[in-house]
Length: 99
Length: 477
Ligand code: SF4
Ligand code: SF4
Image (cartoon, rainbow over all chains, first blue to last red):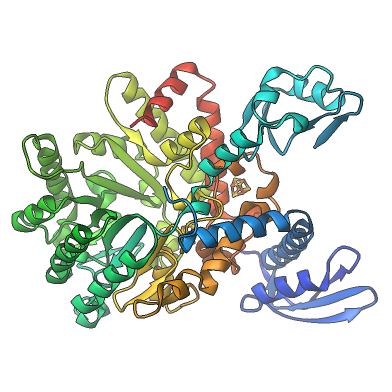
């Protein structure tokens, strides 16, 4: 169930935890869903949400965290993913075993 | 987690684990699986002195890995990394003569719009395109809308496929998904003689089916039952025929209307003479999203219904009734046989554009049928080309690459450490449609919750030896 719509909620995301890339990706995913503006402040970014519901905000923060985790994970598993994806694409073109 | 015992140089590789009540399930990417008590797990973590033999055998000790054997197991479980498209879905028409609550094809405005039919010229180009792809195995699947509405093109295309097959060394199969409203004896004979396997939709007993699948004068339920029986009889009496007849299949879309009817749904399938059923929850994409209030179902509701259904199927099996559920069979194949399960949506990466491709009525090509459905709603993100394009260009299109990256589970924060990773897959089209990005967010993802619930339940079931034996028999079929 959607919670009530409120106005002008400010949330600060510290760059110690969230990279600009993660925040941009989350903002991109939510740009059609919630109205917000953002500005850099101190060592982070402040997002001001307009006409939001608590659920929307929760989902946005969740998505920013998801994106940051993906970026962090890519430094560890990126090479493996690239190897597997390349193999899949090459096989798709017929260079490899078909079963 | 890595536990190092420096002096013996043995490192326990706990890639993925999950605590289920007092047990811990350990899995790895080579299909290795060990269930142990929480106490033993903690002891091994604290002090891995006496590592049990099964940890060595299943690839859980890093200094004792048999790379040849483990590599083969890895390939078996990741069939999509060595495939080129085998499944070629041809949308014969985007029109339909029914009006189901979860599908846009029967919307009144488009029922008579013949421009939504595939022309024979386009259909032949689709077939030519498929024969130019590198796979030695091709499965053509006719879909819609309702494909029988474009019967002349469909039947000519079947003949064309069989002619091309005779001139090539590819192994070809053909299947049709139909609501049967326009089926008659002549069409049925043609399909049987051309070895076309048949599948329909049966959402359960009449009252449930009727609520989901609207047809003029509510004839759908009776017609589906009639033709499933007909094709079943043909299957049973095929001895001496010059051609092979396949047992008909049916799929169930589980909606809010199915809740409380799990047993009746199974009984319906048994009485229709079917030996398998394939349950899937309605997806909140396309037209179904518009009707979500009347048909939507939550993951918890779905899993509760699913458990009731599978428990009932197992009870029937114990009484000698032959019936299986396919989603459960696929997971069991992955768990017990370390196989791929043969389902492109449950592979990592998924089969979009490499295991399957879908040709829309207008000759545009998409990574898969779900992507094509999204296009029918006006979003062409997963379009990978057209039948007039070179095969190489289509098979390496941006959308194919994006789907591969997005569905490779090692790149997903929650999946990369999930004990169910070897059995699971995610869908970039579904993620995009429901969560706004191809990668999605598994913490709140509907499909993740459903897959997790189903696999949890299977591990619970196989604690009982009799259930385990029955489920192992399912995968031999
Ligand atoms: S989708 Fe969910 S259940 Fe499947 S591997 Fe990812 S986290 Fe696990
Ligand atoms: S994108 Fe989704 S529907 Fe398409 S092949 Fe991948 S998992 Fe299947």
